[in-house]
Amino acid sequence: MSVLLCLAAGAVCLYLILYYNVFKGARYCSSVKLRGKTAIVTGSNTGIGKSTALEPGKERSQGYNRLSQTRTKLRLLPSTSVQRVGTIRWCSCNGTRLDILINNAGVVGHGHTDDDFDLAFGFNHLGPFLLTNLLLERLQKCGPSRVVTVASIGHRLGKAHFPLMTSKKDLVSGQSMWRNLQAYCDSKLCNVLFTRELANRLEGTSVSCFCLHPGYINTELSQSLSLWQQLLLMPFAKLFLQDPEGGAQTTLHCALQEGIEPFSGRYFSNCALQQVGAKGRDDALAKKLWEVSERLASL
Image (cartoon, rainbow, N blue to C red; front, side, top):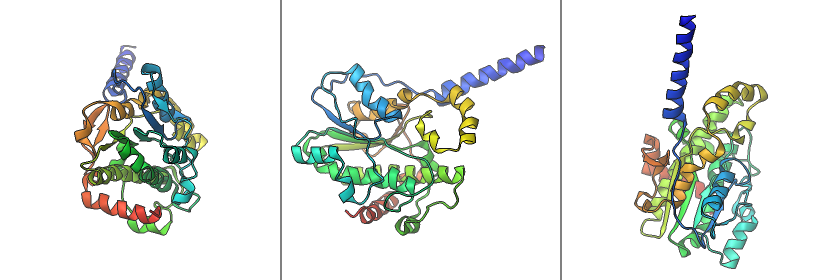
């Protein structure tokens, strides 16, 4: 009996150590005033995006004009399709302020975009790349402004497959869960490289940009998994993963924290500046990805 109690106590201690040192994220606390500010949060109908859009409204309710219905369907490429998103047209044509753009929408899964790009690459990278470029002029006119892109710690496992990117074929072969995860990590490396090159191109302007790891979050991304995979994940998710509100904290930090402009182009996690993976620090790789993305997005 004593052996079982020792094992149980050890398991509880291990769980607490893992949860509080690895999985539980920091909370963003700030009294930043957002009166008159306008933000676009993509993917704000659910998950982290919804919490990101709503939480400033709860705590800083005076004038945070959320365009939370954007719900950008960024599978639609090339640019003529994206320009039909009502919010973009509204910003561009009516002179609406744009202070913060948060590229939050993301997907894990097998398939292709409407323009036959690999789903993860097209949705998670090309879409935000194009959206940001379409709104850059407005962001610059309304500066100081920010572009925040939700990446992932998975970028460390990502690869940049330039020949496959331009061929509109699957970037990772097969249809398994591991294929989907590898394609997701590849797209998150693209997010990190995009942010780095964007910062280089915006140096000296009033626009700063950041990317981030939101933490280990239980969101609707898991719905792309098969039923048995979701069932296997469920106990782990309940024990360790944060809810979407917890996943929004580092996004809010990057969007609202004062004084972080000198770190434009950098990567944050747990509401703090972190070192990005080696491939994410490669300026030549970032520049090449930008040039390839321009061609694919018809910019």
